[in-house]
View (cartoon, rainbow, N blue to C red):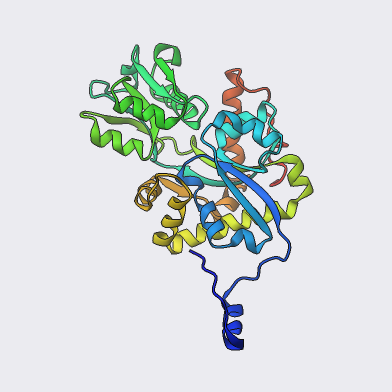
Length: 323
């Protein structure tokens, strides 16, 4: 982690100047929110390493688990930046949240999954059974996508228990109160290890474009402070680079921002994640790429529009900062 040293004498002062980043003389207070999830945790690296401070940003990172509050928080500027899954970000925007896409953060490539009891061997076997998930999270889109592509069932054929969050869904399965659940790490591995016969019917590795995380910013704030938006993006890219080059130190910083999360937990989560740095975001923003962020997001918007859960599927303004 970043340490500050007191320089004694001219030689020490010169040495300190050579190795210590130059921080901006004036700082701007900025607030960012996200829930407890390793995919967002490089922001803690940016904070600990002083990347925000170098850019004149006094960043307040708030860990808010209740995702149902996010649309109101970002719209009324209680927070300026929000990190959450792209699917909920699109639904919030399409239903009136005042937000703009900044960058993609990570994608789940196995860190989320549908875990079922031993006697449930296929998705079709879920008929009439109870499955727990959090409908406000990206796990819902993952579930419905898997159901449409891998079974003959609709949601109505399953007894869906809508939980307060994804962790609660995992705990319900491990406690034996439901037959299956959509969960993420670390509950995913815990369920597979602790519940006899438990197995994953499908994971995000099977549908890697369904669960990815992104950073958005309040629209008015972005228009008034484009330099802050650029600086936050730069801090993220530097943090991802640091994580790749110094994983052990990075995982400690990432875990330190959350309660009851260890570096070992982070290391396990990272195995099922793909982080998006500068190059990955450049590729995602290439409109000729059939897997561009625009194509992936349009699929999400069209999906929810068809189900009557979005007021619009026009994402033109949502991507105004990056097009």
